[in-house]
Image 1: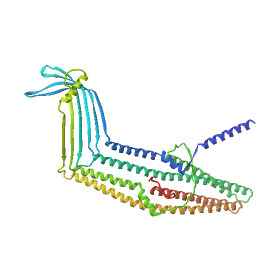
Image 2: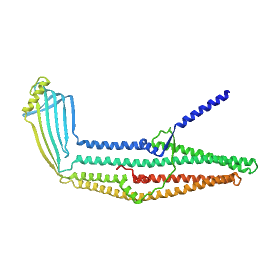
Image 3: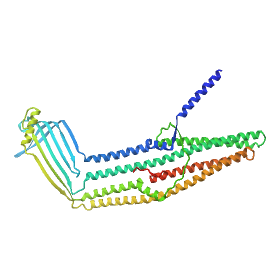
Length: 504
């Protein structure tokens, strides 16, 4: 009774643990694998960060057109040094001077759409100024004062391009290029996940084939032993059957090892933890669909990210040509300023009194103002700028050649891919029919073996033929799926559902 209870408890616990282990297996469909990879894979995360960096660079350049407000304090700013004082009728004398300041600066700069700027700035500080006079036996003098200044300024380049707009255009093109690169990476990931998914599925399918093969060889071995016991077979037949079983057991162990290694590689690809147990499911259905060669080429030429990136490279290089030409261009600048400055006239008093005195002095003192028009033109540089322009023009020509070569290469590639889709679909239909025939042939051979009309070695050959046909079937199915996935990523168009992968 105790043994029975112990066995019952052991069986119950084994059942519970088996159920718990089974619940941890994550069943992943093809669509789920794509979704996980596009959100969790290392490659997607890395290129998302790269695109964000480019976006922030673009926003930083774009913000150059926004106003800028700066404020800083210096409290205190202290210094002591020896100062040379020039004399009209004698050699300079050297007095020791010291200064203790506390104050700050405030500036507001408004960037004009034309590339110039209009600025307002102010500076105000309290200062304790001291000096030791050398020619009076180092007599020390001291004064407290307040300095204040309010200024308006204007600057505008003329006869030249707006560099702020040019820089923003270059940053925008760089940001768009990073977006194209990210889209291309996503499509490559979808293809790589497709390839990895069906590689694991193929190995799992192969593992099932090997397990079925092992089960069949064991059954054949059992039947062989029964026949030998009945004296219907020579003794060598049982040895052949047992060797076949051993070979099939080794084949199962090998296929299981390959399957687990492929699962780990796949989990790393899509961004899952290696400790997770996964199983892949696929419908193994493939419906043929028409692919118009000319439409595929047109979609690829319109949608391919490489072509768009090459076009942006041409625009970016054109900007570099313009920048090179500006090295030797006629240019000018208009600048103007107007400011009020005041210095306290009192030699003592509180900070407020000194500040009031500084403001009054500002109204009494004439304002500082000025305007200037400057122009410049480099006369001769012995070919430096000309050669720099030519270099950038040659690079522009290279970018144009890259674009043309990419377009021609894309057309050639699409022609090959469309042909491969049709070829893969034909092989799949042939192998699907071959599998049905091979399965029926093996069933008949097994009946013949059970009836004694076939040896175990002949049955093993039939089993090998069935296994090869089954592997050819799964390989042709995977080839179909991969060729379609390759067509999708190379044209950015879904011919199965007749829709574009790019948002309009």
